[in-house]
Image (cartoon, rainbow over all chains, first blue to last red; front, top):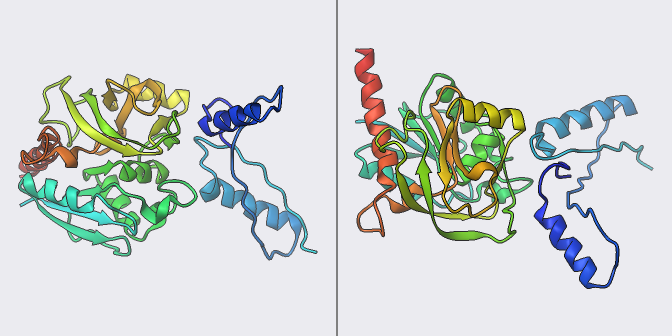
Length: 75
Length: 227
């Protein structure tokens, strides 16, 4: 997700489009990205640590983006 | 003769222009492929414009893991000149060789037009031939050229005179009109405008040729200093 302090022109454009559709009182639209992946690890802690390292080193740019991480056991 | 390596990534598209501009300044310029692990004895490296790896994930994010980038990193660490133009600038920021990042243009649209830039720092290997404060026109062609950096980095860039180029007519919403920056050691320079597209009198202008002539002068000067 683009950092809160940074201009997000995509979010603004989407916000205007939502308002044009008649959805009132919409604000704060931000456009980010979601990545999903499968990870084989012995336990959730290990998976969490590796997924965090992936975000920090490649998947998110620390200068421009914040990220949140969710680890779920495969069904 | 000065040897200049022009790095080609899958998706580079300004590589020929960069090669010709470097050759036009009197260098022995040649291509290296992104899979190469050596720069073949280069005195300087140019990362050209384009869309390396289709800009997947983020512009420059995948290219920085190319095998050749380890050699570029070593070259930069040893003080060797490195120039990143447009996508090359994005790669240098992603690689951590330059501070900051380049985000989607403020106006969202891809901007492709000439812009005027002012040379704010002439103590780099790519600007030494410009008179201080020189203004020239060069095209930009990018969708993600809005320069951003944390406030602390911006303060240091200003204090150390590391903002190398500034837009006179900011086309993308870059913070403080920044068009190009350099690293602390001042040997790595990145910019969004394309000096290689205005580097020959047969084109609209040859104002950009001074970027490549600066390089020739500074490499010759540093060689002289070693003797």
